[in-house]
Image (cartoon, rainbow, N blue to C red):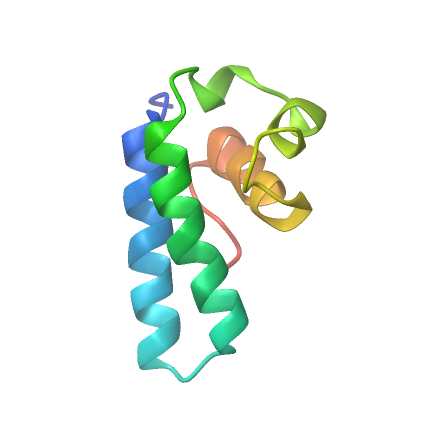
Amino acid sequence: MTTLTNSDISDIFRKTAQLMELHGENEFKIRSYINAGFRVERIPEPLCEMNMSELEKLEGIGKGIAARIVELNNTGTTSE
């Protein structure tokens, strides 16, 4: 499997937010993915090398987004 860059993860979060918006999902959740997309792109360290607890310590990355990053790194996709 190819390692995802922070930019790849950011793109996935932004596209997920767009799809969620089209399907009328919860506005809070949509905003969470949009914000995560912006923050992830600006983090200099590769997220693919971080575990769940390290990700949760990053500003603007909560437990749910951290779980999605781990899931993306492990499987290349998310359940969302």
